[in-house]
Length: 143
Image (cartoon, rainbow, N blue to C red; front, side, top):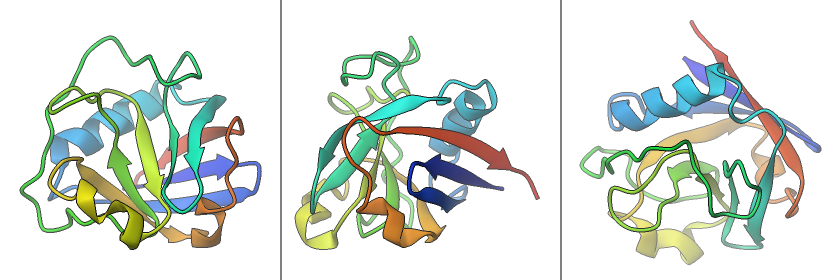
């Protein structure tokens, strides 16, 4: 299973870390299949750091109405260019917000604090082209 995240710059294909973060992946997939992410904005973009989206309010203060626990013990818990990671307001408070990593140098300190649950395998150049306020959609591809 993987996802296509479509932006104004094109489509990125994301491979999930299902073995390392099964609950986080399942949550993201569930929300995507329900259409939760359709037309949401990347509400926080810090060049060289991350592009963050998934807030239904478009300003970083919202979520799906529940929280999920962090999954930090898997093998792929390293923030690097194109990694998909769960945003949160403190340990075990994630929900729908996620971020795409711009660089390892600026995000290594997030290792062990935020759940990495996938990575961009196609369209990696799009990650750093995303601008704050741009919209996106997520399509889950099973197979």
